[in-house]
Image 1: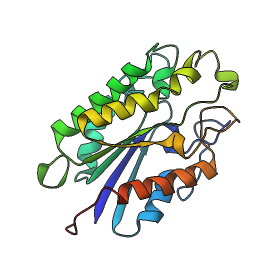
Image 2: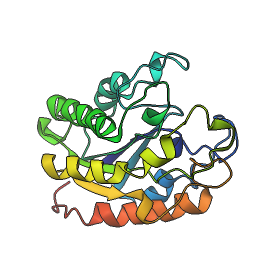
Image 3: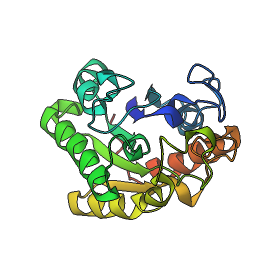
Length: 216
């Protein structure tokens, strides 16, 4: 059996658009659950989504535990061995409190990739396959979040290019979530149940396309 870690923020956690962080879609509705169903019984899909998670930043308001780099190492070790790590982060890095351009958000992703390679939690102490997923761009109207995400919608439209350049330079797999789904107009930055379904199906195809050997 192969294993895949889905490491992300509220759009991996399954937060319902327009609702609070504790209101989420069910396991079978979230994109990792759809991925699990599509890949079949030969795959073990691990969900690690946290609302507000950043790539590498301690959040001065929500807490240091929102730093995706801090939690990644124990997460990798607790779930090893891993054949594939899928990372979909970056939206929260665009909050005005961090004031980061898209290029530095990509650098944050690069730090996570470095840690994965250094820890090597793949079979036999190897580096697992890594897939970088650019989150779908935000809507222009992010409702009551507009002060927190001031300037973020425009920046979010540049993440896919920055992430693709990073993936190419590091020889990683890349997928642009914005090519198949859009954020809900309910709040402007979360995806709805149908988008979870479409994203899970698309990512399953991307995972299959990696070209796995017959050995397990």
